[in-house]
Length: 499
Image (cartoon, rainbow, N blue to C red):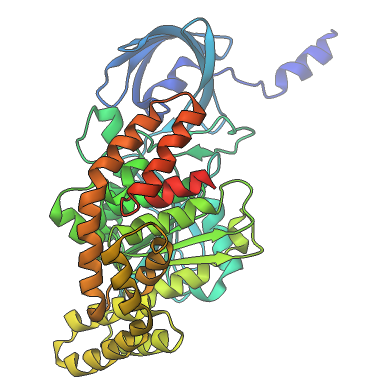
């Protein structure tokens, strides 16, 4: 190289190799919070919700090569920092040289700016990234309903917040929108774009189990709802999410019902630990049943079966949730933007209204449209909110009772006789609309008594069947359960498996 060319080369800006200091600080990773310190090329620290694991490494050619150790073993791995200085991605080895993704982002508490009509970013005290949009004509003196949006797997919630005004512009100017990203960086993160996943599979409630279990996404969201309620003029929360976010929605609503007025799980399903029967604390159960739940799903969904939402609806109905509705679209598939999310949100608004006139209008309209469950749930809320309207409430309830009479007497006889399961599907359809009707309470008690007789033996059969590997023998036990114990909570699930 000639002296002139060498001088020109040296004058060019040189790409700086990452320094060990790039990894120093606090991070949220796929294995919980991590705190690292750096000295020259050496990096060390701890990670995990109890700081129970250790990491030690050295910077080699811009990559942090490390060894990790913790309660579940030890192994090696590497991280590479992103140009933003706030993200790293890499992998780790475990077991017999198996490899998996490991990434993280900086923990840096930040309050999102209020920029009407725009989306701004923040991070909560517990480390959840969030994306805030307030209406274009935002009034800080007004109280708003806030809609929490949870993204699908390997995605981010900013896209949901940005897309909301395009899909449902009227609602976007009515609600405060807050998208929450899961705390686990996704392997799909690349080229400067971060994607996320949520954790909830092992979540069983506040302080239940080890910290890594009870500090999963539902707990982080609960902390975020409390935190943002003190920073923004939020009157109440509707929580909802798409696909993976729908599973998270159920967990947040049912484990933290005191924080939620309405929920709208979209294209997802009910987690095992969210089954109504899993909750025994009467205060929690009462708070759960004050939530309005609008389930949304496309009937042509090829990613998450539509039956997951019909099962969720039936399980919540069976668990005595009064304000419950399934919003479906016969032609829609999995994509969020083509689903009746707007209908679900409008329904949640009316069902949870604090306006007595509005509730009475909604109940009257629901009665005319033969949405009897909606009418009864709204009337129960109206009776509590405005005792002076007792006469109007009684008159509307009487109209619902009149609509129930055609089937009521017939079903009462069939349940009392209980000769076989021929009546069960008709009963479930009746209960879906009239479970709250005053005239139906005798029938509801009779069914509850029958369930008390059937549930124990059904539980035993279900347990035995689940432990069998022989499909033929398993189906024999299922058929016995359906034939003998059709008032058990397992009946609709097992009958569906036998179809």
